[in-house]
Image (cartoon, rainbow, N blue to C red; front, side, top):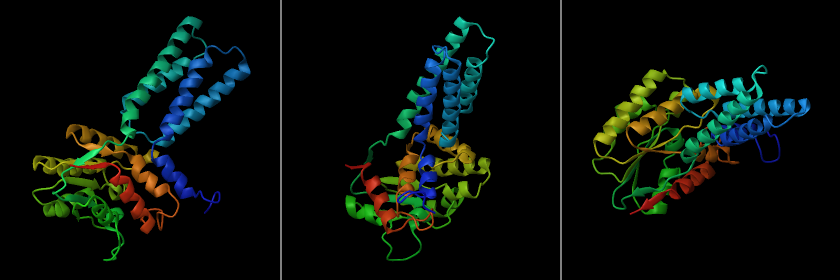
Amino acid sequence: MLLTGNITFESLIWFCAGGKLFFVGMTLLTISAGVAHLVKSIRKRVTLQLLSLISIAIIILSATPLHPIFYISGLALYILCHIQCLSGPFKTCIGGLFVLFCLIIIFLELPRHFCKTIDVEKNKPIVVIGDSISAGLGNQNEMTWPKQLSEQIGTPTINLSRAGATVNSAFERQLTQVPAETGLVLLEIGGNDLLNRNDLGKFKNDSEALLRKLCASGHKVVWMELPLLPHYYPYGRIQRKLAGKYHIDLIPKSVLAGVFSAQGTTSDGMHLTAKGHELMAQKLYGLLQIE
């Protein structure tokens, strides 16, 4: 259903899932908190409080998988800022701490939204382990993004993706087909775990088993971060925690969400069209540096 000539409800959802709204919300929240103690007018204070509540709603909608301690600390400081019985100087101090806290959070989160260049050895294959986003819809002649990427970079690509694949099935089936020598193993996996709401403990254990095996075998691994909505937030936290533990790069969720949110790139909101595969190949090609 179209909301405007070119914007669909699905594209708006994917835009939110890409996580960039986090910085919009945090910026508005920082501004409203920073000037609140300077404002004397009751009407202006109410306006700033309303702005801060809207900002919090935007931050929640962005589903940014920060550690819960950051959200708890931020909420505690926010509540202290709005307790009316606190004295002026103390309240101003709390407001200053809250602004500083917001700036620190922005500083910590910002690097996760920049795409790092990924070095790939030219004479070694890129292996893709994924689900239907990478496998396509089963047409043998379908120009999936791994095929297009291979043509663009001049390096062979082995696409081990399977429709309906989960992290567990990737570990049990696709992993056994990974050759000993690879230039890169690109993981586009976990979306079906998320959509099926697979048990978080199992998702974590399966993901760790997959990463442990790949890294122990000496493969260079990158993992596409999952676009998230608020109720899927814990999956993103698991991805980030495991990526840090095994020292692998995450391709920001805005990359995959950006493909899905573009007009005409999906057939049903989830599966890529020819245009979607082309755009995905272009985005990933821009990240790869062939050595």
